Length: 270
Image 1 (cartoon, rainbow, N blue to C red):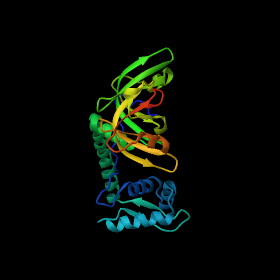
Image 2 (image 1 turned 90 degrees about the horizontal axis):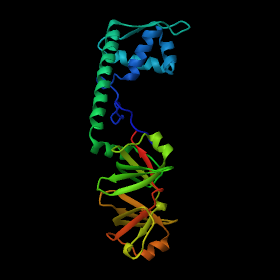
Image 3 (image 1 turned 180 degrees about the vertical axis):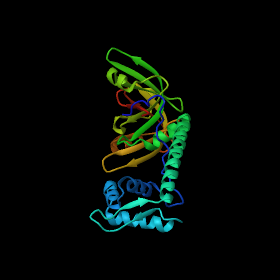
Image 4 (image 1 turned 60 degrees about the vertical axis):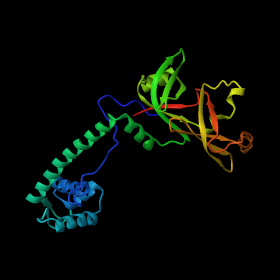
């Protein structure tokens, strides 16, 4: 799982490449830079992993679209001739590098602004997390109860529900986990028990969440039941078709989702 974001840095939520006039980009500027360094179009192409023909075509299009010639090239010779930037080419290279620095500062500022918006960070975290786990819940660590071997970490969802998850003390130290950090919980759908009449029984599962059935989807191997929590989050429980039939599930029915504290996998923002 992800580790804690280092102090003073912000995650890269916003990214973008600088482009001038809809055509001049880092690929062209990279070629101009390599030509300036090597004095040869052929050597510049090799440095960038391009074929000589490909580099020549890029240079030809750039020269043709510019009001002034950017590179002068003498063909022939074992190295494909000599090439050098004109005054216009040097001016363009300097301008792009200056703008690129300003562009990078602008991107960094946007990312810092997003990092200061907890609601937006939670939204973006959901979009970027990729995992095989069917269920992903986002919240904030509200309490850490350390024992001799394990620790119980309490994570509060945006709707106020609290989920307990157990982790060993070694992992707790690796994550540098503290109260108040944003967290993500990954929960296998097969580890959730669904109950429709909780009042009749007592259950040992540490986490017991109430919700309403959104959908019941039979598959070839099992039945997936999607439940809406008060927070607006959804959880999917997988069960046999026979179990789903016995529960007489339907849209809008109130159910309880029960799972042990060792079921959720805990992660925090990188």
